[in-house]
Image: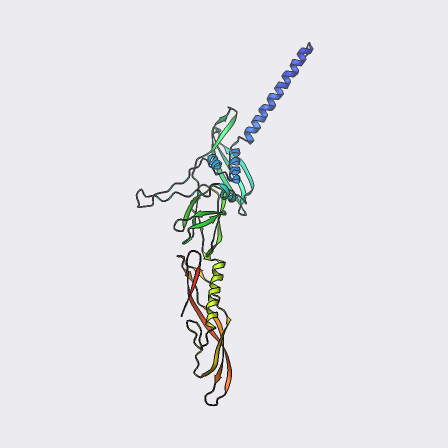
Length: 342
């Protein structure tokens, strides 16, 4: 085509430029629709909310139901307490995905009618490769241009934390309450939930569980309470103090003590005791929270002068005396007490 005037050429250039701009705009809109407003984009936003510890935003994106209290069998309308939401926001939520890495979110399928889609998230969690699938449905568009996708509604998983006699525990570095030694907590997924317990009297080795899907119900973290280091030190100190007190008694048969020295001869002068090997029992905590202190062995040394009544001669006698130490342990909220037993 030949243009007969400069004006025609300008109009033709303007039209060609507008056409190119329109094509570029349409291409950009299509690209944004595929990368930002595609089904995987919604899942990426959900993971970002988890990383930020924004539980409200994550719950809105996931559109999930929070489990409610349920009626126990045979108890009519009576309900168990609703699961606790303490792990659904803030630092506890951030910590649940703190070691999630190598995240790859991709749309794996879209239905023929374009109304339903599946998105797979692959990632490493707690040192293992994991995968979580999300199902979505289209709910219209933004400004008639960009698709809007929502994750299909489901119910959130729960984690149960139990610890005999404890009223609290620590989950993902956040202290949570326990009722009669048990707590049920609503969680997002995926995530790792780590629980431990530390007090002046007790401690429990860390337990963890990985939650990767919505249908994981009542994942359990059972904390086994053990005497804390400070409690064990207190027990060791009290035993040593008791035995040191026994060793000050100037007698063959120290009162209230686990050792003695039967002797039928005559003792001249003082009797001296010394503890040469202190018992080191290892206390444990029973299933009901009761403390158990096993029998333990120790050694004492006795020294005194023996008088021979027939000859009047004396000799220094020194003997090692093995003994068994028995005691019970009781506690209050902050202290441990050892009660020796004969």
